[in-house]
Length: 532
Length: 104
Image (cartoon, rainbow over all chains, first blue to last red; front, side, top):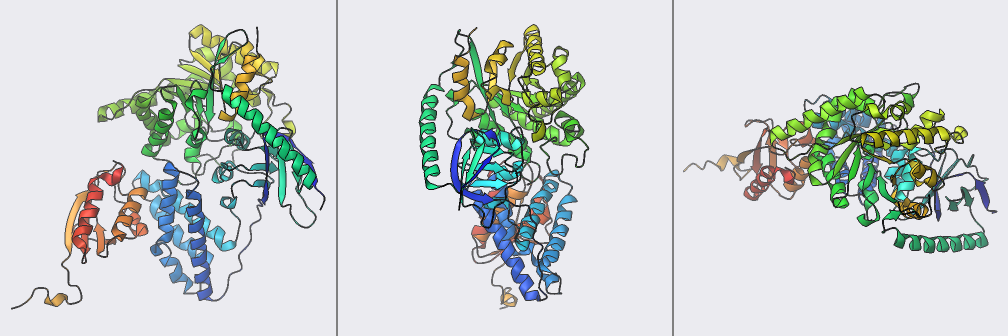
């Protein structure tokens, strides 16, 4: 079999070699039997399959998410969950129909609960229901991606990415997708090489067994010849050696060639991103995305769950400042039960702070958890998608109220300084109108809103250029407003990690850049080359 | 002599009864339910719980059934325990509730 070369676009750097896992969206319809005994056996097998799948997933994660999955395992192990289903199966109803009927009754019970914690558990039962249904119909689920494999698919969702284990290598090769998608950001954060826009992945006969992914050049080779593989492995060895050399330099603070001190902060999407990292590599955390807490399809996270996660991150930082962004759902980050389905243009819809203000009962829980965590370090809270001062003011009033309520209860808390993400051009143009404690420039959305080119549409990716003079002008204007008002400003989008832009960004007056942990060494090396 | 337990030939143990207030932040929700049922399953005794002293009683070894009780914070949990290791079981479940399931 001849090797297959496909050229796409680089979305996350690095080289990877591994077995190929094909993800297909095909839904297999289940052929039910007429025999109640067979249907009952099928349901029993599906429940056991779902239980085993979750138990396997738990091994790859820790903390709150693992606790929630353990709850699902306990529920699946309990015969009481399926009693009603087995009863109607014995009356001749098919297994999948019976399971759905029984679980929907259970779900309705949770949804009707007076207590919000019990209402939130409805999502767990929905997840349990759907996992078992998937096993009944034989649909492949994402959780079966084994560590170290090359995932080949048309596209991949953020939750699918998060469900897989990337700690043992592996890479992503997509027929579609975009380097600016949320998954690409996650892949860069976790150090998983990713190539997008490969075009239709079709094979004659057998799907490929092995693939080489070059996330630097944006190419993929399926079923390589032995010689191709040998050369690739040589390149991997050389790249690893170069990386090790850069690693040793990344613990030092960053200075430009002319001696300007530049703060290098981290962007993280989950506490796991900090695993094994020495806090000395950074001057703090510039962006903690909190969507992962809500993306598990296991229900909205309660206050204690959020507090524990925020505190863990602050503990890691050992007194370095940590900026946590409040929930930035919507746009390309839908969250079941929270974001609005079917908006004609979700990027211009109810997302970020707009959604938080529209769902105060959810936002309040996060503000309380943040206020409680604030006593454990230097915490700053950032509001995403701010367009007008009224949004910032309303959020500030809510934070004040939750802080006052906690203090009245005698709960340890502090009011963290509240800043804004500058990603809507209106906010960049009028930054000085906000009473914010700091600005953080989100270059990804600022670029797409300025250039009117979506970051998740590959065909207009060329227009989505953070180095365009219009975008750089908005960044410079924000930096100037910060200087006038004497508030801190940093930049936390992908542009910060694009070393071709380092010189231009520092020329705007920026002295603080926030990047994924894997980009720290590269960015520090690029900063050292910038002179006056 | 009439033995009060003679009529309980099938059940040689007198049920042990006790109650405790749920002190953890969010009541008997997912994690506490799992902890309680795991604790209860370590004992041979029949362990039941209820929100009122006269029931209805729920099997404390079933997380599905315990979750259906939806006991909120501040609720009083009543336990009814029958079996050879009932005393130890009662002490264990009460300690768990008093301790706020380790998450108070």
